[in-house]
Image (cartoon, rainbow, N blue to C red; front, top):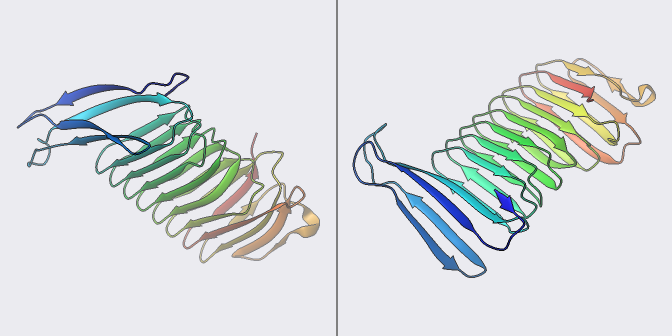
Length: 226
């Protein structure tokens, strides 16, 4: 969570169904603070856990890493990087240049003002309100994006479809390809559109940015978002 103040506040809630409480430490580091939570448990389903609610200055850069657990980031305009091995990532109005990477879990991002990079190994990616998409890559499950698409960007999914909703002020040269799926396109400039069974090139708006979309086994849908 973000605040307009200059202090960092932390609320800690521990749960210990078996064994000792999770260890939580806050350590000063060069240029910032390191907050760590570690569980001493050993048995699946019985390990200790901890919920952390951290409020930081709105412009402070934030790096979050978790092995198991969901992450929520709201109203942060500083640079944000989130990495989780197993857990859902949610972002509401994250700023700076957000980066989200999940090995197993869904990513839901909304109202992103900065350049965004999203990667998921086993989970869907849903991002709305984009203004500066850079990359979105899912190894499994689909990708659903919407917003202003006007920068050079790449969307890639190995097993899952891709749906792109273009805001009215989008401006992109589109190169879409799927190995075995179909491509559905709406609102592209008809004079620039070329399409066959598994590929499409076209222009939305004036074509300022280059957008590459590739799927291996599912369909691609391009449409104008409201």
